[in-house]
Image 1 (spheres, helix red, strand yellow):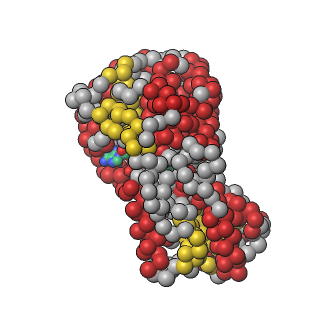
Image 2: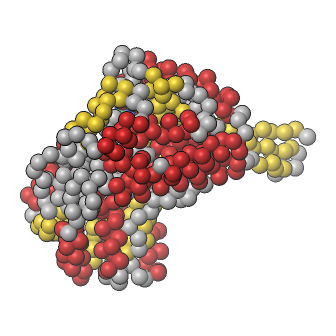
Image 3: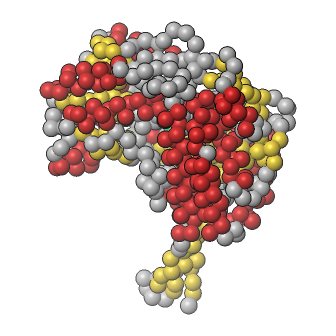
Length: 488
Ligand code: NAD
């Protein structure tokens, strides 16, 4: 199937080579990676496939640019980011189409991601001029203590496919603002958005070598040597907990500073005093944003027994009414999953829950034909041993279970090695605060189905990660503190 003219135009406009030291160049071995449209399974284009020597050239460029960039006036660093924000915002339609083509979500959702991604550039443009230190009198009065902050140094930024632009700007924004240089490795399923971002920031005035992008088939093969190289000072990773653990292990050899934004298994709690309309609305957002392919996606719904059936029925009605299709089409609510493996895993988890006694209220199957579509699904009566209560589903499937007491709800919510986000629906203020204090997560959506906000610290506890992105905390991940003891 030929692409529509505007689709072809946005694909053609993206540089498909590696961006190293301010230049676009082919991979050393000349190899390429095919980028697929998940709605059709057809190849959209090919991008360069970086080899270890390309990755090393990118690190060389980042290291060469580091000292100059650290000395660059913070205001100018911020203004480059600000121009990036304007450009992303001004070109939102075309960048959203590009994202929908490579990742599958609807144009409306891609536009929302471009706006979210752009906000990280604006937020950190404002933070670039707010990096400061302290001067204080030592407690014994004898000396002075000077505390200063500086860029951590060359960074490796590894991003996932599910939010191809925002997961990039959430790292690039603070790294640029702090005065760090970087090598970025986007996911091979969705490299186009990141290549477009590098092009935009290059045109916005980022000096050569500050940002380097390497797309690669072999993620470990290309980035492994960089992690072992003592010149690299920081690894910021967003992706699965399994890969994050491997990278933490690898990072031990150089005691590399790491930030880890990993997987989730978000509980969605609905108490008997909740506003049920708001809870169903929040559930729709928490479950279906990004086709369920979000680390923040509600993975399991724990509902007060008195409301369980009504909640499940109402959610099933809403999910059953959603229209599936290619994200570029008018009126489509839900795009395809990103690839065959992701869909297979979702099918397997639903099959496992049904085998253990869950009842399918709506959906339950993959859709035949081209693309990787899976029906929005609600399962009721899910047994505690079902795998989808323990594992990240990463698809449009909502398992609903009931709880008796508030203590049971908190215990069920915390019964996971993950701790990224939880959602709580209650109209009782005291209960809300008790439950928020009891939940072992980095973030909580209280009576709302979404938490992501560039001005807030995003991140998890337990096996959901280390560190925070966004908010005042985000830039700290890219700064080192140095203290000078002054003898007066
Ligand atoms: P993934 O872990 O498979 O891959 C993430 C990135 O790591 C990709 O760029 C991939 O190429 C790279 N990678 C894979 N193996 C590697 C290795 N050995 N060495 C170096 N790099 C390697 O994850 P994914 O499937 O792309 O994304 C989905 C996962 O990301 C989910 O678990 C989701 O919860 C998580 N996620 C977390 C957040 C967050 O902020 N906490 C945000 C988005 C996604």
